[in-house]
Amino acid sequence: MADCIFCGIASGEIETRIVYEDEFLLAFKDLNPQAPTHILIIPKKHISSLSQAAEEDLELLGMMQLAAVKIAKDLDLKDFRLVTNCGKGAGQSVEHLHYHLLSGRRMLWPPG
Ligand code: 5GP
Ligand code: ZN
Image: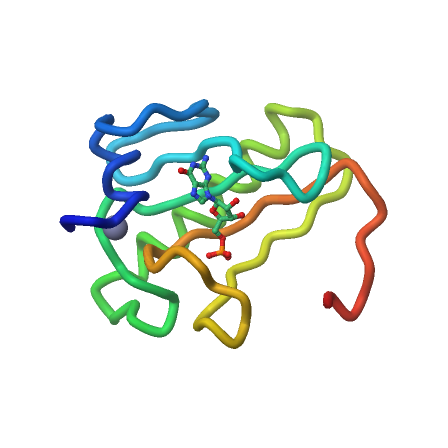
C-alpha cells in the first residue's frame, strides 16, 4: 500500500534490521525500542490493524504468533510480552498490523 511505512519495509524499499522473514511475515527491530529486545512482527500483506483482519487472515494471525515463539526461542528470551495496539486510542501509530515482541526487562501490569 502506498505511503505505508511497513509496506515499504516489507517490500525492501525501506531498510531495516530483519530478525525473521518467510513468505508471509517479516520481523525487524523497532526503531525506538521500549525494552532491551523490541521486535515488530508484521504480515507482508497490508492489514491496517487487528480489527481489520478477516476470516481469510486466520492462518496469518496464527503464523504471527508462532513466529513470535520461534523468535523468542532463537533469541533465548526467557519471558516476553506480545502486544498489538489497535486504534489510535490504544496507542497505534503505524496503520499496518504489527505485534510488538518485548523482552529483557520487568514488564508492568497494567500497561500505561
Ligand atoms: P504502534 O505505536 O503503532 O503500536 O507501533 C509502531 C512502532 O513502529 C513504534 O514502536 C515505532 O518505534 C516503530 N516504528 C515506526 N517507524 C519505524 C521504522 O521506520 N522502522 C522501524 N524499525 N520501526 C518503526
Ligand atoms: Zn502496509
